[in-house]
Image 1: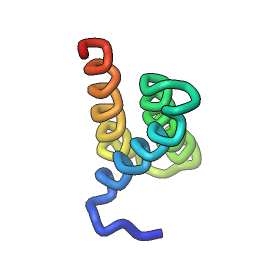
Image 2: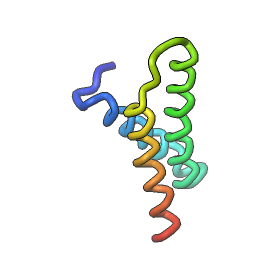
Image 3: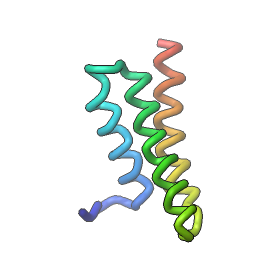
Length: 75
């Protein structure tokens, strides 16, 4: 699958899709946490297998999902 956006924005989009899929079942905060956790686990396993650690690929979903979690507590 190819994404027309920069790869780290594609990571954000997939994390948000995971969150949207889990939202009806587990709630918004749990969905956002799962989306961010997916990319944390993905980057860790790729790093463990010898690939260079991808900070942009990890930071982008964590930043967006973390902001969403923080805002749901405020709103």
